[in-house]
Length: 170
Ligand SMILES: [Cu+2]
Image (cartoon, rainbow, N blue to C red; front, side, top):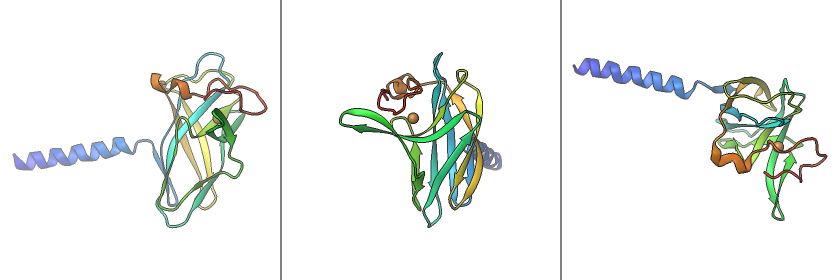
């Protein structure tokens, strides 16, 4: 009985860890967890991508570029300036400090997919290449997930081909 219990516990533990790491990626000292974007409304030409990057090493690294099958892919940061939310292009990339985790999440850093020809639908997958200064490149998959209602106010689907991003209300 005890033996069975032990085996069962071990099996569950293995299963749980497989699930937990199902969409985690590793490159060098970095791990990238849960790349995702949200389904977009009709007519939207942009979509934001989110993920979490952890630097397990003892040297800083930097996400220097990102590419996908979409016409343009950029690194953005939403930031409030004088009471207005703006999206700032991260020209120098995004530093991933040694021993730290950087979250790309609604209202902050995000990947911006631009020039979308069609909506992103739940369950779709988009292949994206992340290039880091030290760790090199890694291919990851951004799963399109159902948008949570609570995040609607912070979504990026509104911003189109404006020259700057000051108009969009994220
Ligand atoms: Cu953006």
